[in-house]
Image (cartoon, rainbow, N blue to C red; front, side, top):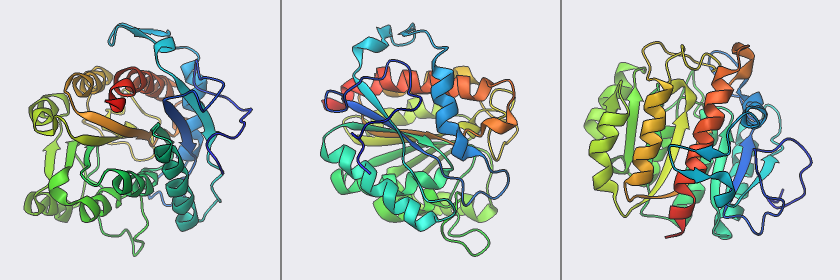
Length: 294
């Protein structure tokens, strides 16, 4: 499937009509084949799009209007239900098309394993890349119940791909003892519990580098984002995540792609999770796309 094919479904607010004129491509990855607790994140991308209709088109955080950023919502990749490897291969090939056109890929998940093939595609284009990972979970397992393809493994895979010293995790508050031990001994950076304050300290070290940002919505406390598959008490506020996005915008790092994953709308009848997610996507678009071209 090509990202510039005609799409007639729901789109993120103010999506352009033509993929060729866009600087960024929004795409959905409706996959939850490997989740270990509550499924449903495959419905996240479309719910985020629907929630975006309630957004103001002007952001007081970025002091920008959405008409100032050219982006095209390509819809969801038609992933084969229950087939993780084929799904990951399709995501890789899809994102590679976007990168080959020098456009900014902004993915909506879906479970966090969908980020793994994106890491691979981005690394092929930017072998000097670093990853900023914002999440409640370490995601550093080598396997889960014998399965190497699991939403608990993408960051371990990333460490093995680009080197743990190039992986920076924030907001972590859940994982096996062995995962925290690996983080400590491998040379990766892991900040527990908080996001904005440690991110502010780390970003100067990443200035001038090509950085991919992956955000799991469950970094938020369930009070702010109950609609996720593996909710973890003790998380950050929506305000802190907005601050983190703005810190990245102002930091001088070159964000070359991003994703927001694990919105599972069935667990949130209030829709506050999808509403928050759509606002984060707005700020990512306004803050990161234009600077990625520098």
